Amino acid sequence: MAGRWLDLRWALSVLCVLLMVETVPGARGPSTGAHISPQFPASGVNQTPVVDCRKVCGLNVSDRCDFIRTNPDCHSDGGYLDYLEGIFCHFPPHLLPLAVTLYVSWLLYLFLILGVTAAKFFCPNLSAISTTLKLSHNVAGVTFLAFGNGAPDIFSALVAFSDPHTAGLALGALFGAGVLVTTVVAGGITILHPFMAASRPFFRDIVFYMVAVFLTFIMLFRGRVTLPWALGYLGFYVFYVVTVILCTWIYRWQRRGSLVYSMPVTPEILSDSEEDRVSSNTNSYDYGDEYWPLLFYQETTAQILARALNPLDYMKWRRKSAYWKALKVFKLPVEFLLLLTVPVVDPDRDDRNWKRPLNCLHLVISPLVIILTLQSGTYGVYEIGGLVPVWVVVVIAGTALASVTFFATSNSQTPRLHWLFAFLGFLTSALWINAAATEVVNILRSLGVVFRLSNTVLGLTLLAWGNSIGDAFSDFTLARQGYPRMAFSACFGGIIFNILVGVGLGCLLQISRSHTDVKLEPDGLLVWVLAGALGLSLVFSLVLVPLQCFRLSRVYGFCLLLFYLNFLVVALLTEFGVIHLKSM
Image (tube, rainbow, N blue to C red; front, side):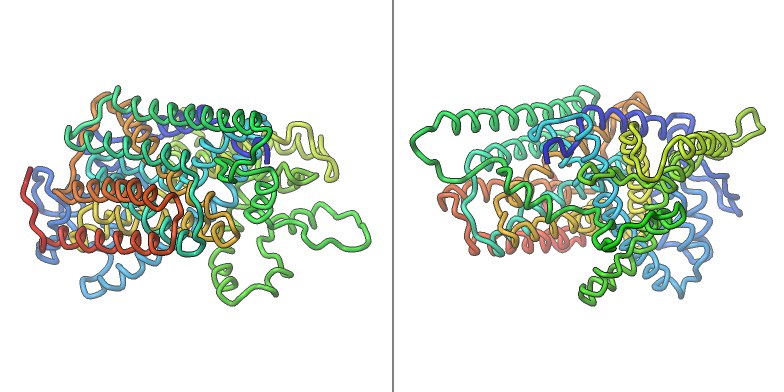
């Protein structure tokens, strides 16, 4: 698995450039964050100052649609659909439950899209790029493995921080995911497989995460994020990466120096044999050739294309359970669309997943997807000189390049520059994730308006649960397979990346766009309750784990689950005003 991830600085620079282009000042209104879509008629309603959009449910039914269309606070900064207008302008009031049901169903499907895109297309291309760049295990593991696993959280935070009205959604999601992972996921791992924790990695990760939470607590108290503060977040993560590398180097040096005594096995990293087993168990891109015919025959170009676009393995379908089959049915449209639009390079295969007809098709479709997902398609439909849309130019250029590639290569031999498709696949899958994350944020904000919920409570519940469920299942699977220590370490390593890079990069992009500090609008004292609960959960583990001599039992796991349930009850009671906290 050597070099299975790519360089963090390279990936973040690509995303910075990409998202900075996506949020140029000319693409939005001046200061209200108004939508760039055509202005809606006032329909007899006078223009008023910005009013909290959640007050729409207190108006007469006949006035709700005009309020949504004319109030800047009800407009989204991106996305393809206007969910608030759909609820209050296109659904009759008596069909509001049906609209909410449809929105929740679409939200769940978007979480499925995020998971499939990250696991089967985004992360494999990260692996291929890191192999090409020949990165070490340490650099790749603490940077791009975390980046691949936390892609939905990071993109959701970037989208939410682009608007001050949804910044609470990002904070709620990052804090909520932190509490969820450090209690429910960590507790579930110890319940499934009690184990002896590695002391040094545990202290290192939990101390760094506590410092990150403390910095965020100060940021909330100040109410704004300046440029040095945002750069400090990113710099602190770089310091964490350097610390991990140094600790691993010192650990290896001590092991080499130990010639007589055999130390207890509490490694900070996996051994080669463990990595091989985990790699074989967690290989996400398994559409390929598990069952080959006994007699070799030469496939035609059409057969190669049909097999490459088929997301279903019929032999595996027969052996799987009914639950797996039902979930696979929902995944099939997403997987087919992603196979058609996102190239994947697999360094572990002899042909590196080279499919000549499909890869040539990718040269046309992938750039088209990239241009149509930038700023929700705004740049794609822009006409050059008022004559030719940008997407037409992209299609023509892609077709020319695909034609040259098709006639200059063969089906049986992988071309020398095939590794470039990993970069194209990485960029395309990143934009798919960004587009899906934008829709997730917009739907959650719409549901918050309908139910009069704050963005913070939506972030700590629905958004945090949706973005963390994939990591939870992955960590539980690792624990059942006999790697509880690795899964437990991933609980802290991933959320450190999410909070530092999510807040730092999100605020940095917003500052570079608006040239002003990012102002935070916390939703009352609930944010403080959330931050305090996260800090308390970390202190709880920091004290209790050493007291157990780092032997994590099922009792410890059940205590963590009980802590999360208590936190959730307190947060919801605070949101609905049952518990009143004095103002600071």
